[in-house]
Length: 84
Image 1 (cartoon, rainbow, N blue to C red):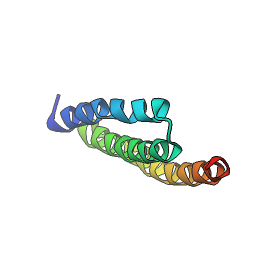
Image 2 (tube, one colour):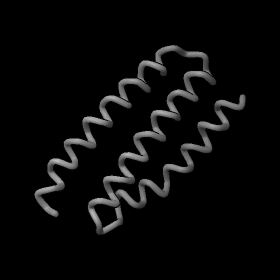
Image 3 (cartoon, rainbow, N blue to C red):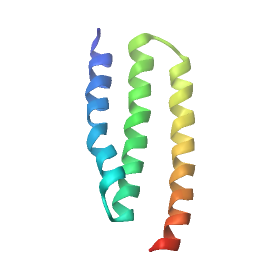
Image 4 (cartoon, one colour):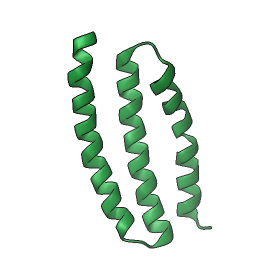
């Protein structure tokens, strides 16, 4: 267990409040903000796991997640404007 893996575990724990807000908050804008924050934290977790385990494939996964989360956020906002 190295420093990178400990930091990844700490970031994974910080995803719990984001998940709570995504599932329970009545305001759609707060859900969107929590979704985007969770996507950034997930990307950082994959970067830390790549460095901690020394696996290059996790770097590619982090880049793909960053690009797809941006697109997912845009789609979510497109459909959210129908309700707000």
